[in-house]
Image 1 (tube, rainbow, N blue to C red):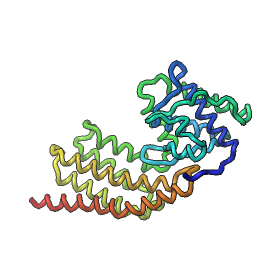
Image 2: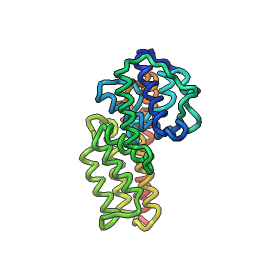
Image 3: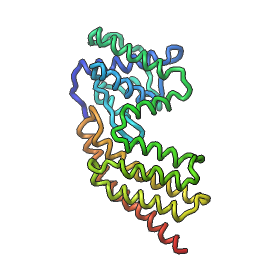
Length: 277
């Protein structure tokens, strides 16, 4: 395991922020939270604290649905984080919880206030996890393309449309995405992106929407592109991540790159072949 030799004060700020969130979010229940919800709320808290001049050195990266973190990343900063906090798919405040922190009272006050606002915004609300996910994405989306692609995903997965046809609806999003793709930052993905766009349009032209195969192929293509694109984004947009892990991401990205193009191209060949019959 790679260890980060980080500032003790920042370690304390991070521990205090985590403990304060867990302690106060469910005051009438156990101080426990699902991992996905915890990471989203911590991401929002991190952004809000930075705006007030406090950097808690929260490790995170931009991925498919906004900024995310992992217990192994927190383990690099907070020794034994997994043993102390992690219970299967949950994060829980250790017992007994830490009470003494080597941080200034002013910083404590700012963190407590920020946590209180987080609680007011999300606590006791139906599907607060989805609301936190949306809020986190709106705060952290690095490109307008990413936000548009979220809308495209919703359109693909939805069974209803305000357009005359599903074909018109998806073409509307494909056209918008075409103008927003960040090609200067992802020159290596241009061919994959254009191949994905072209193959998706081919499916819409050649396979009736009444056939289940159309939905299956469009979703498969969408997932192939979104997966490789997101792996490129996390390399460019991350914070407080050990260099070794970033190198692992780069190697994985490079390794999967050609495979993604081939998968899309295989689907295109299948469509072209079947269109002759």
